[in-house]
Length: 155
Image (cartoon, rainbow, N blue to C red):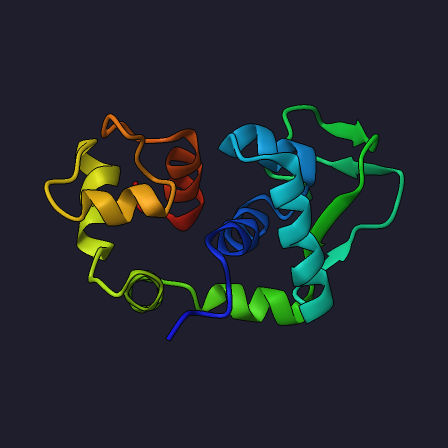
């Protein structure tokens, strides 16, 4: 059985849980994923009621955790989690991720994901990690994996 969230959608949820508000182009830049993929993920999460547009013309650093300036004037469409999205994102912990990855790959790859995050290499499940977009063909961590492990709290 496949989970009802893609890995990109899961990343967007985790990213917004940590950042509070952000825009698609920044998420694409941080992950190295195509902007279209991030936009599709955001659109599907908006349809599900997990994400919404953030209104207003400026945001303060206290609201946007990844911004360096005290106040930022918006030049992009910013998104944030809805109440429902926030409640759902709070449930995502190690046991939830273990089950998610098992359903997604058919293997128990979560220990390999944690090992890759902490040690920089994984001794097992390298093909599954490549399919997830976490490893390159040469066995190196991807930019997407670095961003994912940070927002998932695996480091």
